[in-house]
Length: 113
Length: 108
Image (cartoon, rainbow over all chains, first blue to last red; front, side):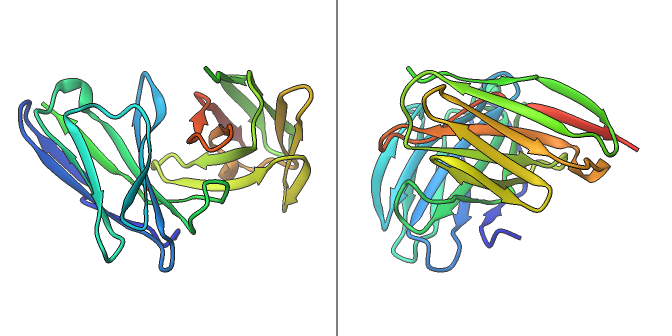
């Protein structure tokens, strides 16, 4: 158990809908990272937050947004969902510096029908 | 653009065999991670290294910065080692760039 929790574990929804994925980092970790893993693209970095502020942005679509709250949990919002958004979404956390071991949550499996 | 290439893509081994998974990257990096993804999907960080060699149990990771190459070795492989092994690199302060993974199956 990494200490990182993600909810929900599974999500099935329809095209055009909006969903929110939630992540709670390990106790004491200030950084939260979001990753998408699809069958054809592998793991891709989406976005990083550090202590409530956006720190780095990767291949995140404009339809996706994220935030980190004062209690350090983070949410990833996916809107106007398309079939191609079906993927595993992982959250990871670390103490703060990017050059640290990241601890991954169990992931949320999103299926868009 | 930093490309991360892993080889082989798939690997089947008999229990007890020594296994090597390779990772090559194209630009200078500040650190390299090896991750293990279990069949159920969960990801565990195995190693983070920026030089030399690290060992944990039956796992050994090495990196050659000049050659831009890293290897993950598993000694005395066991069926529970069956997983996807993913290499990821950090270049400066840019976020992790991942390889496509090596799927390992160890047969008893």
